[in-house]
Image 1: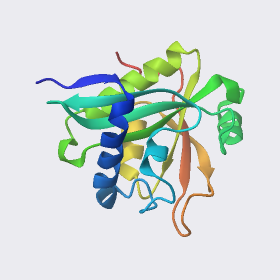
Image 2: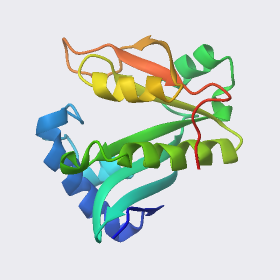
Image 3: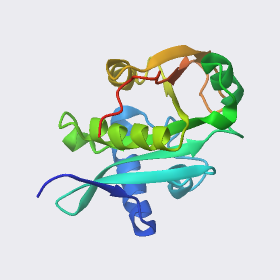
Length: 177
């Protein structure tokens, strides 16, 4: 059965949460384990504009969402880095792929859909990623044309970790359909 990327449905949230916690010991995403709140609140976030799952043989094997960053903690830093008002930005969020299926292009397919949606909204794509701990993700983003705008130290980052890179996708970057 081929890989399908489709909008996330309410009944997918538990499967995405289980996927996140299953891969967490390997990727350290999210950093906190256990989370200080239900994993479903990590999946479905305030300001979410859209979300998708990757499905293979009827199982959820990946997820990504897009967030409005108007009230995001680092919205001002993204705005300064891009030179755009925060209302014109939207963030890639909660990108996760089942560790058993890495290397199959699932993350890239999810990013294609996500980036295109942000552009279709008339917004500029941004994201945040922990540099050292998530170097593989940073490499994926850079290979797609994303650029590092700067570094921040958000409140959720454990002591001794970091930096958190804030990134954007300049016009003409990846966005495949």
